[in-house]
Length: 327
Length: 252
Image (cartoon, rainbow over all chains, first blue to last red; front, side, top):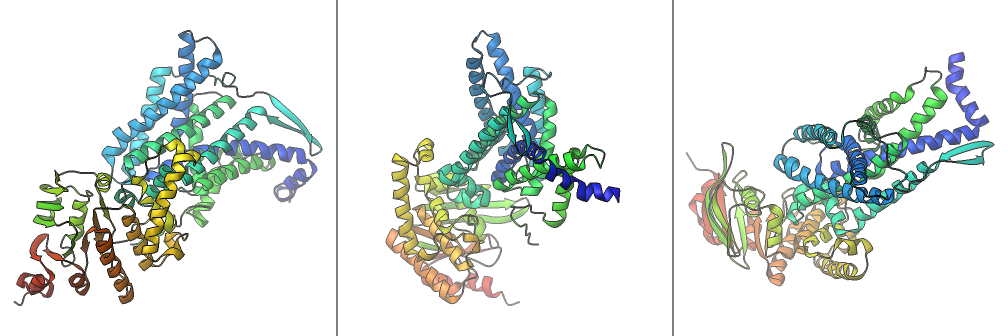
């Protein structure tokens, strides 16, 4: 009885009695979820346009962040004195690097493998992962680095709000992250729905051959999507790096994107966002309210259990297209 | 306008097209017919650059080529429709047809983001053309409907609209009337003739319905097992012994 009580009654009593803690937990879940959403978004962009499941997306986050910090160090070393100047110069160069990466991936990996089975392309992105890890370590060293949050004018420190009969603490950085992420998502959706390239992108996502027949160049579109997801990776890398540190251990979070994608659907941008938030919030809530009963550590597996449940009952995800294959 | 010289195409050991030559004259309607598996669609794919033939040469508007990317064919003025409708299913009929104009839009990307100034004017201009096409194909009522939910006959019409929006010199139609009822077939025939008359577009089409082919086309080429067995006006082809054998079989 005690067990049932602590699973079905007690957590809700706690939520009711200490709403400030509930809000705090929700907020932290939201922040974590946002980062999951961003990583999943990078996957979705590439998957929609080219049908490639890009295993390297997680490492692209690390690679982007590492390039940014590494370039900053180099610039400082060369004598670019004001920290903010060096930071924004490094940011600019990193964006160029991501563009070069997108172009290189299209030329060297995707174009020669066009029309190959999906699994081959998937394996190619697997290889890309290790090239990025190796290349990043070769150039910038393998030790973990500190994100240059201050020089990029990202705010620091907590804000305490007296509300809900207690104190809710919000990190300024998290608020900034939320704003930047929303701006980026809105920007991307405007880009997709209102511009010619955006229309071409949706066209490619719908049918490759039809897109070719109206003169859309697949190569160009691939560069655009890989660049777009490279930018998403950069933003994710900055935010995640500012919360902890920049190291290759970060790529673990990429695995979290998988349940997010299963939840939201592989081809849906809103799905990636909603899925990420659900997983983030669910994870934190479970850990805080139900964790003690189960001996803690629930956030290691919670997302995957949710994904399993979805695979059983709604394999196309919340927003995904229904999969109907004709035989 | 287009000349195909001694083209051969094979997939591994399977020969799809063997040593086929023919030409398409400016302003005509050219039909490609033949039994199933005769290589008709492969021929179309060769013309529009989806397949690269192992042998032979294709001359389009005076320029010879052996290898070409599909999107370059589109740039050069070749538009096509597909046997199994290939539309952008998630988009509306209007957006699908607008996509056909993507090659004709040139304004800089940043203007597009702003949606003002030159880009806006350009968009309006293209939209006008597209509205004309919608009017012409008599589909104004489905303008805002996602094409995925439309009946098959209308999807075929939207697909034709998308090809027309490219203002092509050469229009390739892969079985434009497959799966249609009599009334829809008559409509489609009328559109094809009108396109040919009003816009002067050269058309190459694949079709199974013999009646339609004989009524529509100026000249007909007949393929069987990847070889050309006849070429001429509908009347000539109809009387050709090899064609009759291919369609009805040979008595043993």
